[in-house]
Amino acid sequence: MSELDLVVRNARAVTASDIISCDIGVREGRIVSIGEALLKAAREIDAAGRYVTPGGVDAHCHLDQPHAAPIRMADDFTTGSRSAACGGTTTIIPFAAQMKGQSLLEAVAEYHGKAEGKAHVDYAFHLIVTDPTDEVIGKELPTLIGDGYTSFKIYMTYDDLKIDDRQIIELLDVARRYSAMPMVHAENAECIEWLTKKLEAAGRTAPRWHAESRPMLAEREATHRIITYAELIDVPLLIVHVSGKDVVEQIRWARSRGLRILAETCPQYLFLTAADLGLDDSYEGARCVCSPPPRDKTSQKAIWDGLADGTFTVFSSDHAPYRFLGEDGKHPGGKEVAFRHIPNGIPGLETRMPLLWSEGVLKRRITPQKFVELTATNPAKTYGLFPKKGTIAVGADADLVVWEAKETTICNAMLHHAVDYTPYDGMSLQAWPAMTLLRGNVVWNGKEFAGDLAGRFLPCGRPSLYPDV
Ligand code: DUC
Ligand code: ZN
Ligand code: ZN
Image 1 (cartoon, rainbow, N blue to C red):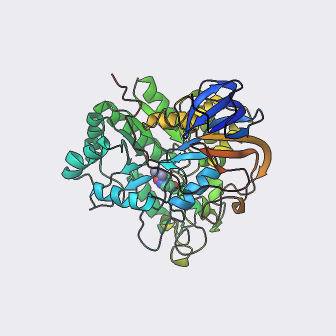
Image 2 (tube, helix red, strand yellow):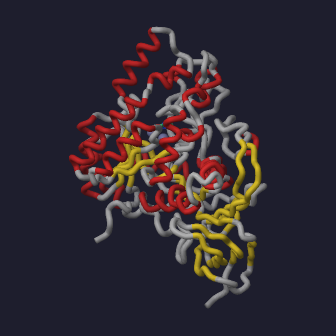
Image 3 (tube, helix red, strand yellow):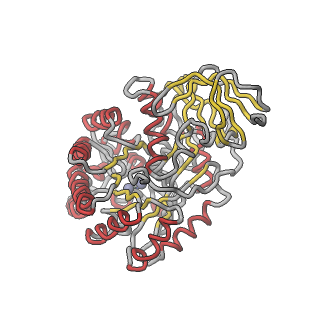
């Protein structure tokens, strides 16, 4: 047997099922042995009994997506993936978004142009389908699914992204026939538009009214509707960024009917509430404008319970990076604008894993195994990247995170994205990654970023909800 390139010694290695004390042997970027007292390698890392988890798989983040001027995403593949690596994430799945009128194939080709040679971690693409023409449904989407783009997002809201219910049904049918994983942004667009107009007419345009314009019932109704369509078509699907209690109940109801409905939630629904958008007419809360909006303490608890009891399959960041200052972000054109014009989204690629490890695992709300399942194993399985990604096992890529128990107060200056704020500023965590390895190479050493644009594109295989038979 040839020599190992690297041994990570004395690891307390965590998988979705177990915690074992072991050495992890790596050759050519892959884990080739897990055992006791492995032979000395060219490079050695002593984990010193600390927890070692698989590198995170962030299955929902937005990087360098096209926007109408003056809005622009602050993070491209380089800064976004740098930030991911420093927070323990080694695989990202952002979205190749089709503009209305554009070919889906062209959207994917353009997005490759933005990613190739510019990523510090490995990446796959989800698709966003906004214009399901006959050509897209009949040819482009089936071709792309076959080529490794096996998941696509459907929007039920946002004028420039949403499609109508008939189109949704057609797309779910394509997903079923070609074994793709639909992801759905479920909010009722009509309720939101009606409420927004009413609030505007009353002069209620400050950021805090964003939360009022998108109540949980709008999310609950759209979730129920998409579950109904999934049952009609007999297709699995995943509801993204579930924000609170009523929607958690919908997911449980769907599961109780035996439907293959998966759900994702995000840090903002655990750590923020609608109050973070402001209690008065100040514009400061624009930082936390995202959709669905953060809810209340009762919903935060429902989300924690759903993470612990298996209602949620995936924990993602929904990183959507817009600067607070400057005219290309939350102040479009340099102005304080009505809430409907504030770009929706908050940064979170780097904080996703530390927030859940510190506040979930170390506070004993979830086990270390559940953390791994939610942040790495399940996202990799759901989108067809397992077992190359998402676990610590012989044959898997040597994507690893060594955790260090150390008090860390989050501030934007310590983060590596290109956004000028973090919604978690001032929050005190009890852990942070001491090291992140991508295919055996250190990309974060706990103090400094050490990536070298080595990120590779990963074609996705069959989503796990379509078992091979
Ligand atoms: N909502 C989305 O649907 N996407 C990006 C960010 C957000 O807040
Ligand atoms: Zn969304
Ligand atoms: Zn999103």
